[in-house]
Length: 438
Ligand code: 5AD
Ligand code: SF4
Image (cartoon, rainbow, N blue to C red; front, side):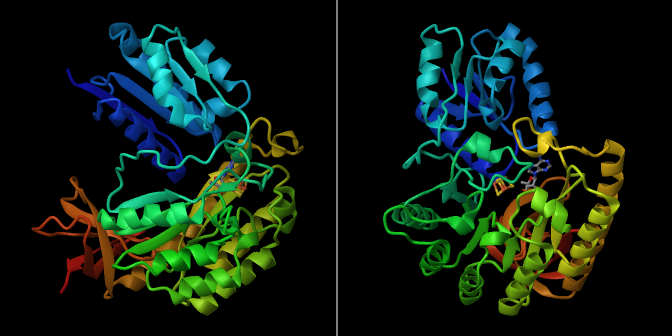
């Protein structure tokens, strides 16, 4: 009899990729992927805790499984990742949802098979959270779902302790994979037909290979020297570590996409200091200038938080000014969320929700107006799209430009995994629409 798994993923690309590793482990146990909770023999929630709403979302969905579990007592429910890794959260989860069979953290995903076996051998509930800085696992199977893109971890964890951020507490200290292992993995992916490699780390710029000391600019130059046509992307870059060497390495390569996600978080120097970001708004703008010097076409995207404790109207206006000056291709905007255990959670002057809401609306409006100008400038141009899927609703193929813009086009042929040249006829917000050309 066939057995099925279903994985629900919350949060960032790191989690998306970890869900591929979970899928790889479950496939080794003989489970097959299925699209619905109802048919699954094992359900895994791979959770996020970066903001409160990510947690609440997971709680809501885990809560909804109570009925299904009562009807299907053999179904295994596992909850893993960042949420249970937080202090005391695994115990809380167990109390709140006693029907959850396995609770695991961020440092022991690779032991999931053991936990499933323990559960199947009659153990009541497995609660397995490991502390410490985790291991660097190599050779884990991955059942990838993002073709033609492949995610590749280069670092795990984070040492930066931005005062609002829970990541260093749930993912441990930063550690880098060996250069030769990263290179081997990329080579295998390219020979398997992947067309885009996205290197992942909380701060890829501080990558340092343990035994040979290879640093990030060299890593990406070596990868981009590999044979064949493919795109190379990476995220995330901390502005304090973004160097001229890296800008040069990006400019010199025809494989590395001319786009960079460079989270600024705020335009106020007072707030940046309180956030422990270790740069000023002027430092940040200098990095933007540096990037544009080497790559005038570079699309710079960012993350911005509004409503950080102590943020005044003046501070917020400084953020708006920085956004105007940096002229971002697009930006992710967030309302500050108080995370227990972080420094900022203890700071005075937490900002009223109504004030944050007004600020984020104003910021989104500004960011969207910049995005629209970039998209409109593409109308009439021919852009290269790496086709990544088919949008059933629109009846169109879709994929991204080198700069991260989504492009849609019609085709009789299945072009997923192909580079397609598209003449842009129309732009709508962040999306481009056009026709394939020779
Ligand atoms: N509240 C709001 N946004 C946050 N981020 C990280 N922690 C928080 C928080 N506590 C945002 C930052 C980061 C992105 C991944 O999430 O902007 O760059
Ligand atoms: Fe969080 Fe800062 Fe580390 Fe990014 S660099 S994961 S925002 S602590």
